[in-house]
Image (tube, rainbow, N blue to C red; front, side, top):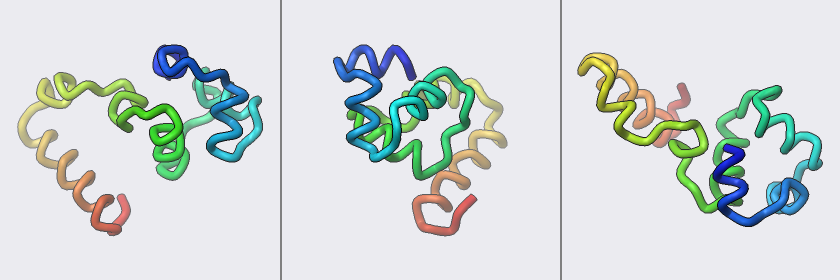
Length: 87
């Protein structure tokens, strides 16, 4: 996520202000000391103008490298989340 933040031209303080948290928490998320919840992932994606996949380090090709049964499970999970069924 650090490279996406740097490419956006935003400082950690600016991102913190955009998503409504303290700067030290942004640092903790960027460095991996804290894990992103679904809500925080969405907030970071919106603030950075990036996809949640790119924030998580997925670029499609990684998903395509999974065996087909695992791809199906992953896509079903994403569909369920988007439909409000949760994970």
